[in-house]
Length: 388
Image 1: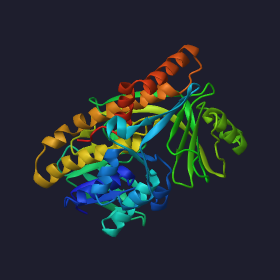
Image 2 (image 1 turned 135 degrees about the vertical axis):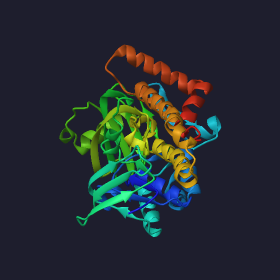
Image 3 (image 1 turned 90 degrees about the horizontal axis):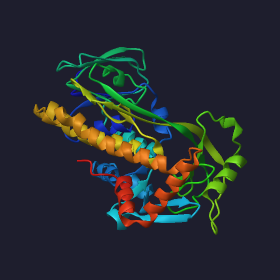
Image 4 (image 1 turned 90 degrees about the vertical axis):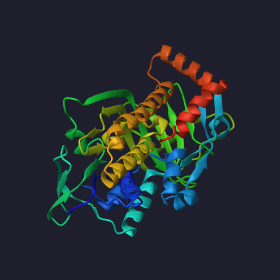
């Protein structure tokens, strides 16, 4: 097969890239080792930055987002001193939307299938060849067991941290930076209306807690736990009791309901640079991971893809290489800003067991909720810096 861009990975980064390229008359083929049902069912991030919403809307993907998503104009920061609200439109003129990554992927898959553009799910033995040439190739075995070869002008690695493309850039010039955090999140989905109008980020002596949501009928909640925590030790009653303890304030009650999903997620930061080698380009989790505290993972993938779409349009559509040559440097500026913000939010809100750290955290929370300048900094980072 012949195409202009071969895309490895049918997550939000790969599918959005294929959609944006198609709108510029650039052909692509998407290959994914998981099934379509698996890709559409993965429970991931749920907060979209203003720039992400604008990108999806401008690309013709915002109809269901605006109908079913929930616009949020702020967050609550909570400590033993109380619960304070940050008003994003007042502070920075932007908002965020609660609309799960699962829903974003469903919209992208539906658009891809409606356009009848080639997407191969459940492939195996995927390999990328000749990335230093102007005709890189992707070989794979399709779901029916047939070997296939895809000849491209460029390849986009959108297959996540555990995918094949990231390791192809493990050369002498490649650098990686990592940080593992000494805590994890126990996350639950519950069939119960949210007990808050906007997200609550709570510092508590027992550890961090977050009240988020997926819809008007489904709540998403998190507890800070030890990375080695045994999930089987957490009954529904224990989870709800601890959430009430950490999130509770006078005059407010946490509504409980059936828990439909639970998991423990380790927390880490990871950045790999450069994000390009020859005609192979990385986007999303293939190049960077952030802890979920700052709600940046999916949004960083979208910003990568917007920049990469510009670069690939110029490279394979117009024969100009300047944007492709600058892609890694430009994308990494935003990656490092989001990585710092995610680290900062994580460090401010999670208990380490050290009382000195606790006093610093409480001082920082008091400053953010009392200083307009500090609140503006949080608001503009949380709602997202400009992509371009």
